[in-house]
Amino acid sequence: MAKYYVNNTAQSNGDHEVHEDGCYWLTLVVSKKDLGFHTNCKSAVTEAKKTYNKSNGCIHCSKECHTS
Image 1: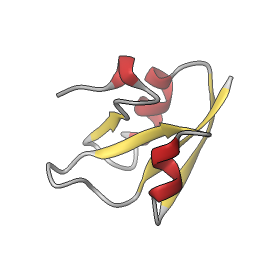
Image 2: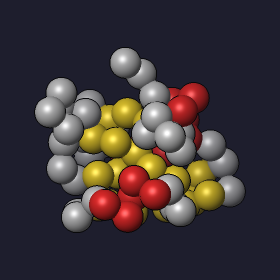
Image 3: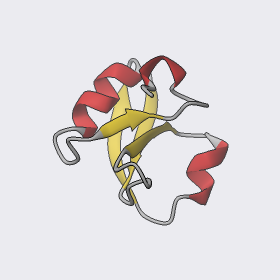
Image 4: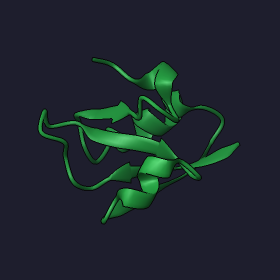
């Protein structure tokens, strides 16, 4: 299981990216919400969508949950 976070700041397209703990891009996030531990990014994105309906997996650390 890994710990996941969602970026509180939306990208220009409105997406809030979900990152796995340890992702390089997470280190650049100014404000994030702790999503807790998840067995995969799919459940982490589902959790993030409870706060931000337009949530998406990071293309680098959660590629299987990233949508274009």
